[in-house]
Amino acid sequence: MSGFSKLETHFGASNYAPLPVMIVRGEGVFVWDQDGRRYIDMMGAYSAASFGHCHPRLVAALSAQAGRLDTISRAFFSDTLGPFLARACELTGMDVALPMNSGAEAVETALKAARKWAYKVKGVPQDRAEIIAAEGNFHGRTISIVGFSSVAQYRDGFGPFPPGFRLVPFGDVAALEAAITPHTAAFLVEPIQGEGGINVPPPGYLAEAARICRKHRVLLLCDEVQTGLGRTGGLLACQQDDVKPDGLMLGKALGGGLLPVSLFLARREVMQVFTPGDHGSTFGGNPLAAAVGLAALDTLIDERLIEHAATAGAYLLDRLGSIRNPLIREVRGRGLLAGVELHRERANARFVAERMVRAGVLTKDTHRNTLRFTPPLIIQNQQIDWAIDRFAEVLDEIAEAKVSI
Ligand SMILES: *Cc1c(COP(=O)(O)O)cnc(C)c1O
Image (tube, rainbow, N blue to C red):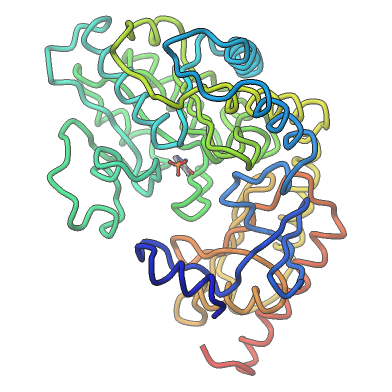
């Protein structure tokens, strides 16, 4: 371990267990360690680095804004926030947007909006609103959000949790309908579960869930913090299912890999429940975030990254699907959101991720013993080839027991 990683380990809380590599520089799909060794980034910062590292147009937008106007708070109007929100609404088809910083904050904002909408608009009795979420969800790390996680570790030691949430199996529309009561405010769902293991629901799931929500006057809240902005080969994953949600959360890639930028977007009927003082964030929508967020949205369109993600993603899934190796249990995904689940008794995904680092490929294990492949959207086919060839070699080495796990 180098001096810097020793410092990070000693003075930092142990809430992460980084893979053994220290990154000092990034450009496009590549990053470099302190010895000048190059790695291909197939992790893409959990999808936050969709534009590739240090994209020149985004860096320019950030530097220009940083030299002109920094944070002023929402106590005043700025000349950057309006254009950013307008562009986000125009692209997503939503009416109104509320800027926050992290994905978790956008989700919290959605939960608050849904509850208040239930009381003020739907007429649910005070403090009785219920929100339904899916098993295997990942919506962030706040107390209220982990309170309805189905991952025991995320909850363990952090209770008591706010009431008013219930879980239904992901992909099961009958269970969703059965869970709805007159007090149900919203159904919160990821179109494809990212952290839960790149779980793709059965075809038609989201459209049917949307129909059920409409029928029972329940808001559909799509968390596209990970799936949104081109990741799955469409601007939004829900649009690929012809679904227009009542509320939408964006984050991760929205900050262009440079800053934390998130949005809760909604229909006006939902968002109008917020009045001045109800909710806020000191840094949410600050001029730097707005400038970078707008540049990220413009770059996504101008560089045709969504179309590119669709074709590169099909290529990636095809390459992953054609690896013949007994360690692989299943390949899942859509677009450039791909996961490879390994047989638990044969290989440990974390161990494979460590071997991959040594082979020059950054990936990360996630739930269900799955390796995630979520590279920057700008990735080219020959770069995919190189990374997947290394992956296949690592799997072969382990399968042939040249290395012990
Ligand atoms: C990452 C993620 C979040 C949380 O985002 P943070 O910025 O880490 O708070 C929320 N929802 C989904 C679907 C995510 O993937």
